[in-house]
Every structure is written in C-alpha cells, then in structure tokens.
Length: 139
Image 1 (cartoon, rainbow, N blue to C red):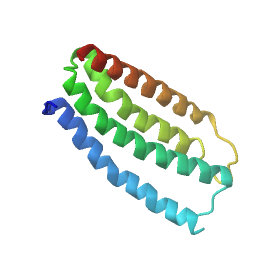
Image 2: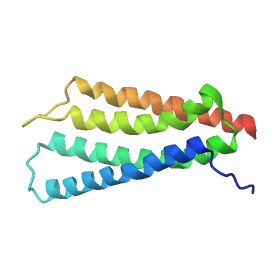
Image 3: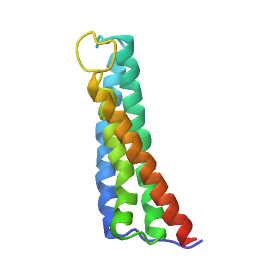
C-alpha cells in the first residue's frame, strides 16, 4: 500500500478541522447540563441538540478521513477543492440547522432555519459523490 503525504491544502483544512473538536467538546459539556436538567429544554429541543452535536462530530471525522483520499486520487482544480471542502461545509450547515431551528424558549417545532439541514445534506451528498468519482477514476 502506497503512502500519501497530505498536500498543503489538505493539511490546512485538517488543522482547522482538528481545532473545531474543541467546540464539539463544548457542545458535549452543554449536553451534560441538559441531561442533568441544569438547562430546561423541550423534548424537541433535546432531540435537536443531540442530533446537532452528533452530526458535527461524525462529519468532522468524515472530513478528516476524506482528505487523504482526495490527495491519493490527485484531486485538483474545482473538483479537488469541492471534494475537500463540501463535507466540512456539511459539518457546519447541518448542525447549525439543528441548533438554530430549535432556539427559543419552549420551542416544540423547528423554525425556517431547519432548511440548513437539507442544504448541508446536499453538500454532504455532492462532496461524497465527487470524492468517490475522483477516487474511482484514479484507481
């Protein structure tokens, strides 16, 4: 199996992604306060807080995993940029949709910002497809 050194672009993205883990940890701390009932939320808000936190963590990890594949495939240009950044963009948009659409005292259903979840899902799908196609083309 060949080893691939990360490109400077991927290294920069990886550095930013690694630093975001601190914000995900902060969200985990907030969820411990929710679980201990120190923060009063509706059942809907609890569910969306958990979903937002989980999506953030999983997509940051997926973003880090995708970078070496983009480099191994020799991804460059617009498709290379998109293959490296679309999943991290989803890691921002989808959790933001969960968090922002459930903000407000006593909220029991999402507001219009729930659309961010679906925009993030489009970025996730498009980024994964782009990277998958690039990896298959390089095989």
